[in-house]
Length: 354
Ligand SMILES: [Zn+2]
Image (tube, rainbow, N blue to C red; front, side, top):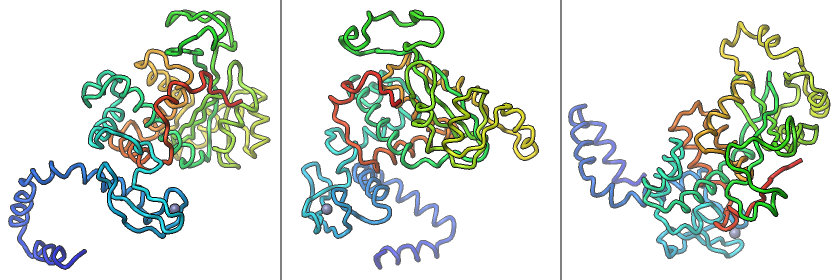
């Protein structure tokens, strides 16, 4: 803090409570400052969030950087003395090439934290519907990155089970080439009964404390490789995994050093009941997931992983708007993922991992 500010602060401390209140309201009434400079306040917050542990070059990771003028959009530019490249606080992030004001993005984060539709968000932020759609997925891509890289492993007692979504090519052109079949109208029953390749298997796991995760595994019924790729390294070894009697979960537990309990969560829960009255069940997790997806009127399979991350983030933060907004913001400001607009709709119609 410079001397002038520290002098002011010590003077402020010497005021009586009434004087302090009067002083603060005086400061706050100079709103023209706040309004005119809100752009910079937001900008500062990217820097303070992304470089919380100190400035570094996003291109080579070196910390030997100096200020070097401003970018065309007025952002602080830095020069990396090591790789000689210049960068700003948005380099390599979702916001790198944005032409829209950051205030609009921040407003859009609010819309997402409130689970608003594309149409409503577009209207509130005064952006076009295609832009609102692209932003949603750019934001979810960075949130997904963050979720998979940073989120803690599930531990203790964990319950797992898979759920299924209809394979959907919603919004895809040339559906016959992609799907090998004619498009069916929304809500129509799928062609085959039981588990078929028209169903997307999503392995899910939830810890007894309530943290959950889920990701597309494969088409059709669940197998060991789908479980391994989606849940494998996300459950701490030594944890107790509760599931139904499916052999595949038994094999999974052996592979990842988990204790398998197939007598059902109820049994384990009974033992733990004294310590925890709010045991979360995988069935509740599945049904709230389906409820979360309902307003989207059928999610295209190529975007399903994004929506699953959105659901998990919302659920893991207890649907608290403020925490969700903070996580979205951190994802967008920190994650080094830049997805071009054209790539969003061009992604693989079936992002199956196993
Ligand atoms: Zn560098």
